[in-house]
Image (tube, rainbow, N blue to C red):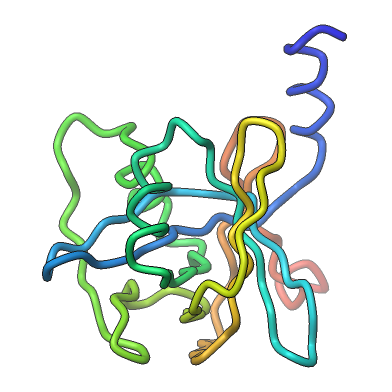
Length: 159
């Protein structure tokens, strides 16, 4: 099967956009990811998928902790920043959640401790037990068909 065909098919699945963060020796590290999902309600578990070649992989293996920042629709530049798509780094404001760095203004912040990691092809799945959550009433940033999108506000659509 052709790699491009596979990527195009997977691009038809609209996802939210997250930035995964962790901290080593007071230095915050982050990467943009859309490979994130909830796994279990009891216990509360989520999973992220990180490529074996990604620098973030070793950092999460070292810290055994990560936070998932579900970006709000006005945070596209932050997504691009952590994806390495900007020539100059954008300023980022961090807060703390369960002693983990999280992005200020995100639609949701989810702090996790790693409870398992599973090799899956050329990625590692990090299963995280949720230890803290903050949710703000914001529209999410969406990614579909290789482009950032915004949800249409239901109230505006009814007008």
